[in-house]
Image 1 (cartoon, helix red, strand yellow):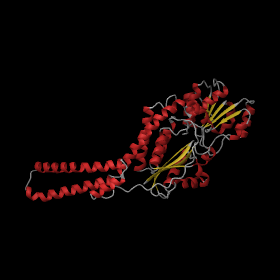
Image 2: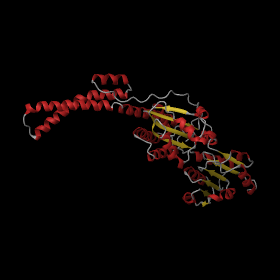
Image 3: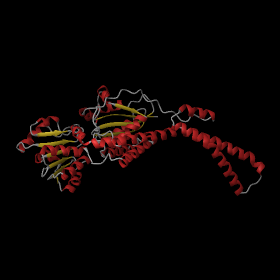
Image 4: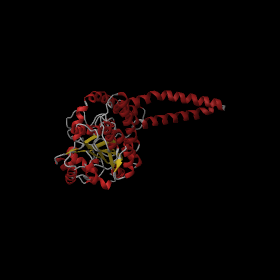
Length: 443
């Protein structure tokens, strides 16, 4: 069994390509089950955020390439995807997942949202029946590693998020957010975070719309906001100085024509759009209009860089912790491989013990229940003492990742092979060169 993690993210692929393979939340269960149906895939889960789509799989054959599923499912030419893909196997896949969960691979290093997104992806996969023992153990290890990083470093201090970076941009453009009207389009977590930052900066009226009106009401209530029916989105948007859009629409909901109409109604007073959606909610052409400022998820990375110097220092400590947690997980995984040999050793010893007790039964004569119990305890204790050294030797050889020593030990005690060796990882392709950035990543 080989662990394989294949995907694209904000470092390896432009936004227009990430848009083509983005998976909406309501589509994630069906897409995960479709991946699980691919021949050679035993277990799987998919992490899909505005900055990454990653398929984590346990595969039976080195010929299985989940990248083919990504291309076929979304109708994208694999040759177009290939230069932007990264492929990680076994220990490298473990390391990448642990770093993602700990937000060390994020656009904003230390942001907390990605851990929740990984947990949600895991929950969807479990509910879809695509997670077994292999991925269950792996994800529990990833969550433990992320918790340790959060607890033992200051990487999450001085909270910086994509939402807060967007609000900082708005403040720079308007000078002050005091009394500005804000329109939240989409009522997800990103919108809520943005609203909190805006209110802290003195924003005035908060307008909220969502396709599900009840969800819009829930978001608007804490901010004394006004709920706008989704069908009145374009009719109302011109009231807002700042529009933060984060929907799961498959295409742009704000076009250049909409922008022209907004400016006309506002008598050319400027508008600021923060587009947090992938695929994008705002047509890039709208940003070319005089008086409309549009920033998408990739634009925010440049602003985030200025916030990250302190977190970069903390990230060094976090990376060391992740390396230790990866090695610990790999040792546990290797130890599992010797379980069949240990079980066989225990079974052989128990057969010998039982045979010797039967042979000695006639010589011992009739024993009381207390005497039988004493003989049983004595023989079991002796067997356990004799078994302890070889079992420890097998486990240590597994922890040291020394298959030659494990094979020698098994031959010495005439045991079966320790376990089926993991399938050889497919020949690694040269990953897409990740852009050299300061300590910023993406969710």
